Image (tube, rainbow, N blue to C red; front, side, top):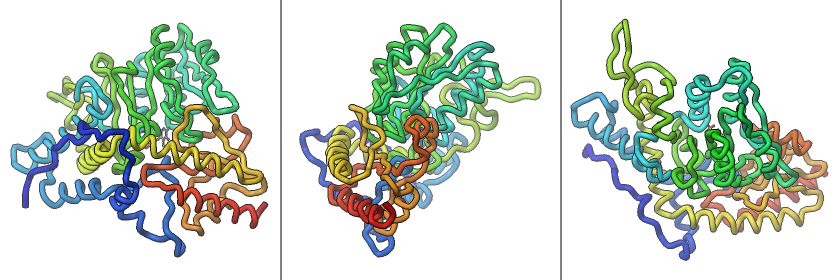
Length: 424
Ligand code: PLP
């Protein structure tokens, strides 16, 4: 038995983008991809909801629990120090992944939802006053609407949304008009979960900052597909979830500029976030611990570190190139299906194919596809305002990841044709 966690930083080693990914080898890394569903090989196209896990992630959690698990930041004993080292090494991996200036700016949360709630409940509640405004876009996931709505309701402020056009792109002129002297924060998806639209966030941040408005980016759908450099972007906050980037569920990251995090009140009170406690007064811990109350998701953090290493070992540029090829093929093939309409046709998209088929309810589509072994998401994708904008109650969404193949797109299209024959 060894008490030495894996502290190697793989995200720094980048293979050349000119070299194509060996997809068969990638697929062998994911044990679940060899299983069958209803007697057919699993075709997993629900990656925007949650992606599958490579052996490196599974193994990182297993070895933590079998070899060096203990609580972090508490003990002087060997296991606690080894666990703490692994936990903090994962923070450094997340820092490098986002190119944040310091590990102090990396806070572990349960996921994107908790990260946004943290900012809304601390930064939002201390800055938003009656008559102020919080700006979002018409593309947002409910997780980047409801926390702001709650703050606005409490403070007597107004939540505004920048509209999107028929392709599912934010109308920048309209967004600019809504950036007013009353706007306290702009909270925006980097990439839309329902449509795949990649927002021009660098340009938008510049617009917002020119008016003195801080920007939170919801990176839940961007982090697995797009290289993120928070310093180059200049965003004030950035949030993403482990489970969408081949890591464990129940863990995520909030990046915040140190200057803002310093001035924000704590999110939750408890262990680890304090320097000293008496009945008269508590002094809070330094960053990032001020925002990490209680025993954290230690295995989740270590697993997330392994996932970021795994992604870094392939290279997000190569992952994006592979997925883009699948998006082009998938778009072409779906456009050939009579009665099928793709919802979300932005010029800049990640590999998300949201669609409706005349005469086939998305839930029936999902069920037929499941019998073909194809896992897709059907419904409103926690983005009801997007569905409303396009006048549909739901769509079927195929969302792709690095391990998907052209052959799997063919299986998807055959399944869609089958559903049409049955229902349309
Ligand atoms: N934001 C976007 C754009 C998402 O796609 C999701 C999840 O689907 C979330 C936020 C919420 O992420 P989580 O459930 O991991 O907190």
